[in-house]
Figure 1 (cartoon, helix red, strand yellow):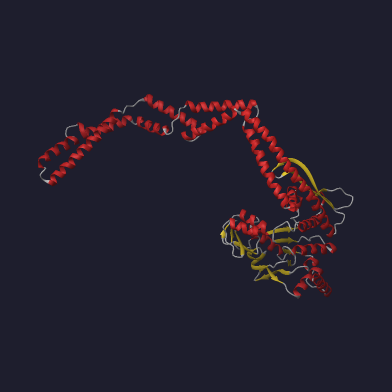
Figure 2 (cartoon, one colour):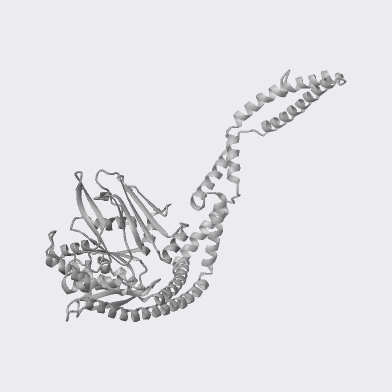
Amino acid sequence: MLSSIFLSNVALIKKQNIDFKNGFNCILGQSGAGKSIIIDALSFSLGAKADKSLIRSNENLMRVDAVFTDISKEALNLLQDWNIDFDGELIISRTLNIDGKSSIKINGFPATTKMLKDLSSILTDFCGQHDSVGLLNENNHLLILDKFAGVEVETLKKQVEIAYDEYKTILDKISNLGGDETERERTKDLLTFQINEITNANLIIGEDETLRERYDFISSAENIYEKVSNVLNKLDEQNGCVTSFLHDSKNELSNLSNFKEIENCRERIENCYYEIKDVVDTLENVRQNTDFDANELERIDSRLDLIKSLSKKYGKSIEDILDYKSKLESQLNELENSQEILNNLQKEEIIKKEELLALCDKLSVVRKNNAVDFEKRIISELDDLQMKGTRFSVCFEKDKPTKNGYDNVKFLFSANVGQDVKDLNKTASGGELSRLLLAFKNVMLDKDHVQTIVFDEIDSGISGHTAGKLAEKLVNISKYTQIICITHTPVVASRGNEFLLVEKKVIDNNTISVVNALKGNDIVTEIAKLIDGNQNVSQTAIEHAKKLLEEKS
């Protein structure tokens, strides 16, 4: 449940920590006092779109911390999956600066908006004047019915999903064979052409690098020949060359071998002589093989162009091209045997489709059986909310099978006796939708796993005996789930277990909203204000408020 929420620089609230209890938490206050700020801040902390207009005037940063305790197993599993520690409190912190940048932390660990939304969907549910619009979206109707049906439907849906994936895999394989015979022949011709183009190139892995090196060498042949010749001339060919000088030097010292130091120097000169002679031999070989050959240069250039052209079509490297060729050959082999393969796949397709449809049939039967109970329970809830004679039904239409089965579901409704049921968005008024939403919440009470439900003026437009029934529904929900409720209706307010008052004040020429817990006579006074509709309450309103509170107990 939500244990507390801390707001900093959120709209009219400067700094405020608000504590919540289990059961029915009732938020009171005059219109415009700032009650909705609490809901907006909580929504923001749980992943709602960041809105800079929420930042308090003349401030650069707002922050909201939401603290949850006694969280569900599903929430604990998510934290474990994310390697986030939990020591009895779940603290969600979110900030937003004036530049629109937002940061999120879950128990001190940085988190993404998606992580936050996944977690918040388990923690809380928001039900306001406009949240009943979700009931009008037919895409939600099947999801609601399946959630009501519970484990049996979920088990069948998993089986349907597996069967659908297997069926879809067969269809994809059939499609990959190229469709009809004419299309397959076209594909075979294209594959044969591509394979031959690569085969005829006689590619060798690594040859492109060798060719580029050879191309660079031939292109520089004249320069290489000139430079190598100059070096050879200095080392071995001209008078007084290096080799001649070294040869004479070692011979001059050969007769002085009795002197160890001189003999050592002679040996070093001799080593230099043979090292230089080896260099001379190598460079001579380079010179003899250095010949500018325009024809070879053209041949190499042409070969490199071919490799470049093939790489654009089939792969970045020669190795990639040859790998691609292997894939083409496998695909061609399949196509050449395609008729036999196709016949086998078509037989398998029939089997898989029958298996899928059989599971879809089972799923549809279970859904329809649950729909009957669902209709009865919704109508019963609406009767309690003074909507007697209301008709509600679940309409099924069969469609192509998908991973969710073949059922299309939509809810139909009629508030008036003698009138045919029609789509919700065509028949239900705003007040009727609010009561429908509350009916759904009561029916789904043991199906939803959220531990906190926020009701934002769901009693808008409802009064009299109906408001009393609505209050009873909220009390019933609060026995199982924590409720945080903003209300202007006295009978609804009187059913609360905990009371918070939001007031607007002016301090140092600044308007702020403050939130305080109510106790004792203060609770009576605030409910009396709802009865009288003004600040100066009458004794009659006071007595009426006391009576309402006594009825609760």
